[in-house]
Every structure is written in structure tokens, then in C-alpha cells.
Picture 1 (cartoon, one colour):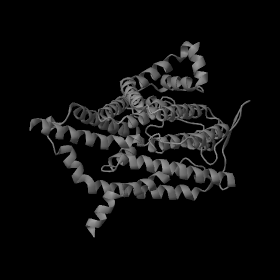
Picture 2: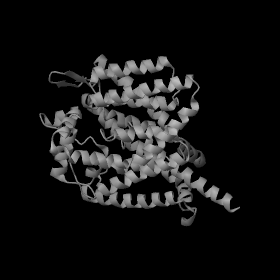
Picture 3: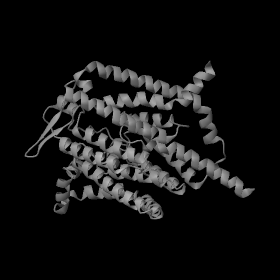
Picture 4: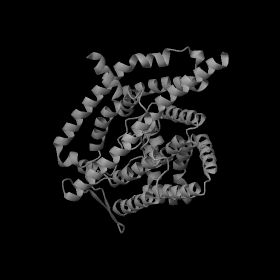
Length: 414
């Protein structure tokens, strides 16, 4: 009986993840505001999910211990050694951050990531995609039927932005964009023209409803790339496509670490005016808001207790008329909340993940990661598993890379 229970817990991470994801999704909807009981139920279900994750972690702990401590330090590759050192620094930094600010944002995220051990990350990605499509469709239908409200944001001279059941219009547009991207990833690009046309219609309709320009442009670019991809497939130029994937992956893993640095430099150039002021207008005042926060709060090694206020429905109810001070850059946002020590560690871990993926010739995964990581400069979605499942690659890829390295080393010796 106990063995069956342990087996069930080990083999059903996806089931617990679905329950957890559902509670995260509810937090982005107006259902919790229109029906307060739903928020209470959501919290209870989340604690149930945490409990199940914890029990699963206990069950897989012996395997974890064997995987991490089963081999001598000298037997690990240089990359794996670097990862272990960086993780230790990040953990210490996060503990200091929690003790000084009470910030628990990433503690729960890391806990969930740890419990995904021995689960295929592609299954998690597929599950995330299916949940995004299903839950978003239901919520939009509820909003149209009047079951929950449609939060509308007026834009002077530019019409209105509709949320259709979400707390903010961008939530809706990003659900559409990321579910489409994950669908294309899941299908490995093998999508016919009809489905691409449907995604195009959906993207155009979402832009018309939400007026979310960044998301529209991003998905539009991907659709165009997919059309070019299909033309090359039809011309039987698969070798060229494979070379392009490899070259793109190689370039991105080399330039990724510079994205956060360049984005921070651009923000600090805002007071110079001129082209930087124009860029700020194009980016919907992102540069000014981020710069003002840096001047007011400064960036600290272990983070600061900064109250970022967005323009969502919850904030409107709580604060009434106010100005947003939200930082949309994921990397700078992390520097504020968790500190630049943790942020630097996070960037290094992601870069090492890209290197391992490249060495394993997982170009498809690198392309998916690049979309989220580049988008992180404009929106904080990388450490939000509601939208971004790429963090679930970290533990499986490290484990796979480590084991293959040791096997190859044994073969070389023999």
C-alpha cells in the first residue's frame, strides 16, 4: 500500500502541477474579486498542492541525494561545478533577502522547480500550453456571458483596452501569445497554413481587444518566421534550416549575458533626453519608471522591500487614482526584489543552461528560451511559471548533462 502511494507521488507530478497552476491562474482573474470565496478556495488548493509537492520531494529525496552526492566532486564537469557554486551563492543570497525583506516570491518557485525532478520537462511545457488555452478560453467566455467583469482601461484618444476576465489586458494578450508559441514548439514547427492563419487571426483580434503592441509584434514576427520556415521545408532545404538553428543558438548563448547589462545601461541613459526620451515613449514610459525607481530605492546586493504598483484591477480598487511605478524589466525587477547578487547568479545559471542545451544539440529548446529571455527585457515573465515553463528545463538538463559526462569519462578511461 505504501509502495503504491510512493509510486503514485513519484509518477504524478503533472497532476499536482495542474492543481497548482489552476490556483496561479485564478490569481490573475477578476473571478477572485467578483466572488471572494473563490480566492479563499484558491489559497486552500494551493496549500494542498504545496503539501503534495513536499510529500513527493520526500519520496524522491534518496534519488536526489544519489544524483548530487553519488559522485566525487572531481568527476563532475567544469560546467556542473560552476552551477553548484553559483546555486550555493544564490541560496545564501536568497536567505539573506528573506531575512531582511520577508520576500518569499522565488522561494516557493524554487521549491516547485525542485520537486519536478524525474519529470520530462516537455510534458510540463505541453501541460502548460493546454492549461493556458483551456483556462483562457473558459475565462473569456465567462466575461462575455457576464459571469465575471471585463476590466476596461481607457486610453486618451486611443480607445479602450479590454481585459475580458483578467486583471489587466496584458494578461490576456500574453496568454494568447505564449500559448501560441508553446503550441508551435510542441508541434516542432510542423503547422499547416490554416493553423498559422488561425493564429494570425487570433493575434489580430487580441490586439484589437487589448491594444497590447509588444505582444502583437512579437507573435506577428514569429508567424512570419514560421511562414519562411515552411517555404524552406517545401523546397526541401532542411539542411539550411538546421544550420540556421545552430548558428542562431550559438549567437544567442554568446550574447544573452549582455541583454540585462545593455537594458540597464539604456535605462540609465534616459535622463540624457533626445533619442532616449523617444525610446521611452515607444516603450510606454518603461525607461522613466525604472530610472525613477533606481534613483529612489537604489540597487542593493540582497534586495530591498520595494512596493511595485501596476495598473491592474486589484491596484485600482486598493489605491484608487495613482501613478504606476512598476518595473517591467525582469532582470532589473529581480535586482530590486532579490538583489543583484541573486540576479547575477540567475543570469549565469540560465547562460550555463543554454551552453548545456547547445552541447546536447537542443536548438529547439534554445530558440524557445531565447523568446522568453529576450521578452524579459520588456516584461517580467521569466520567473512566472504561469506564462513561462522554461525554468523546468534546468534540473533535468543538469542531471542529464552530468550523467552523460560521467559515462563518457568512464568510456574514455576504459
